[in-house]
Amino acid sequence: MREILGRRRRLRLRRRGRPAQLDAALTCATAWRWPVLPGVGLKAAGGRGDRGRGCACPDPECAVPGAHPFDPGLLAATTDERMVRWWWTNRPTAPILLATGGRAPCALSLPAMAAARALVELDRMGVRLGPVVATPTRWSLMVAPYSLERLGELLHAQDWVPSSLRFHGEGGYLVLPPSEVGAGQVRWERAPASDAPWLPDVGTVLDALVEASSGAPDGGSRLAY
Image (tube, rainbow, N blue to C red; front, side, top):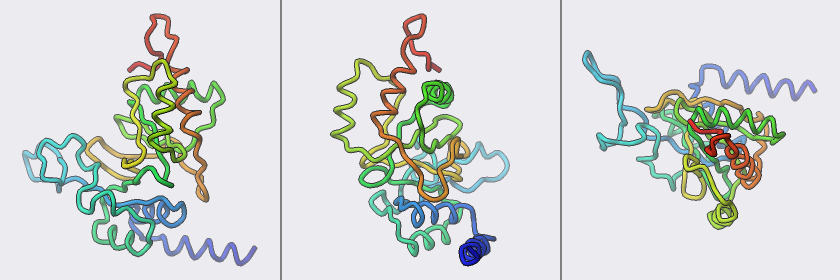
């Protein structure tokens, strides 16, 4: 017991003074084995008259400011501690991107207001959820890895799926806390367990979302926003 407490104390001491982004990225990569890479981030704040911080990428009309890969590209995502340290030591405020799919977690996302209602409904239904990532505009329900073939089969079996539902699977990515992107601050609505985050099956969550979103008195979706 004394040895365990000593290791925990040393870990806390190492974390003191370490930037939040680096600490979170290392936890994802080394403790949870989630492949990560730095997002492009936001451009530096300008002076007087600046209309806000846009994306640091070359596209002035970027649809997801700060919240996408650029350099390095998505295929560079890794769990290697040395690479993660190098990235966030050189870019300490870079958003943390999780490369979804393969052996890594995937996610289903909904507009924020609809997702807040969905969580209430799913809790009422007794559905066990995993970590939930929230931005001011969208919430993402993390699920166990799934293939595109499995997702296609699940969607084909449904009579109807909310049009606002998005899927983050193979070849995709998800921005993780405590990143800041153009949409605002990214946070945990439901934080993962510190040791080994549990993830539900995508089919279970999809079925529950479809059930929770149907049956409104006017024939629409109870999760409409």
